[in-house]
Image (cartoon, rainbow, N blue to C red; front, side, top):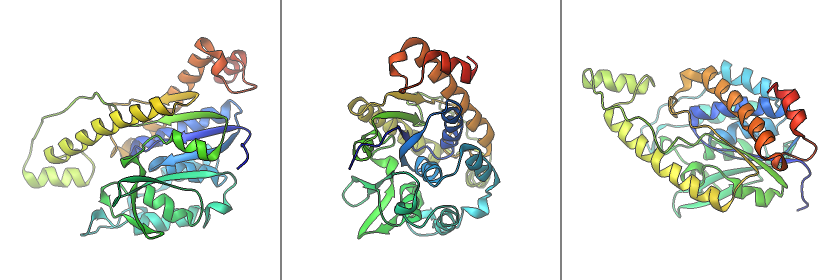
Length: 294
C-alpha cells in the first residue's frame, strides 16, 4: 500500500465520552487540516466512519444531536442487555454499505472474544464492522463476522494508533477519551433497590454493582491504553480526562462535544507554543494562533 499524503486521525472508544471527538473534528477543520485516513474503536469507529463517508463535523454534530433512544435501543435477554439491531439499522441508514465505498481509508478495530485478539477490519461490510466495534461487553450482543465472534475494540485496543501502520499515514493525531485512571468514587446508595435499578437503566445514576464493575473496567482500560500508547505514540495526542462525564453520560452531549472542542484548541495552541516542530507540515505557530484565536 502506498503512503497516504495527509493526516491520520485516531479516535478512541469511550461511549458517550466519544462525543468529544466531534469537537476535535471541528478544530481540525478550523485549522484547515486534511484528514487522509482514520482508525477508530467503538464510538470512535462510529464517528470515524461517518467522517470517512464524507460527513463534515457540523453534519455529524447535527446527526448526533437528533438521534433518540428509539434509534439505538432494543432489549435482549441473551449475551447483552441490548440486541443492537436498531443500532445496526441506524448505521446502515447513514453509512455506505462497504469500506470500499468510503472517501478515505478506514480501520475499525474489534476484539475476537474467543481468542482475545484484536481484529482490524478494513474491507467488506461497513455497518456490520462498526456495529461489532461498538459492542460494549454486557450492553450489546457480539457480532458474527467472517466466522469470528467480534465485540468492542476497546477491550483490546481503545486507542488504535498501531492501526496507522496499516494505513500508512505519515502524521498522526489521536483523540483519546479513554476514561481516566483517577476519578472520584461515589459510595452513595440511596433509595429502594428498584429505584436504583430504574435510575441505572435510565442512565441517571449507577447502582452500586454497576458502578464498581464499570469503574474497574475504566482503571484497567486506562492502564492498557497508556501502555499501548507508549509503544505506538501519535504526533499529537489530545487527551480528554473529563472525570465528570461517564461512558453513559449521553444526556450531556453538548457539554461533552464542547469540551472536545476546547481541549483540542488548547492542545494545538500548546503544541504551537512548546513544540512547533510537531505541527503538521504547512502549519506554523502563527497560523494556529490566527485560526484558533489563541
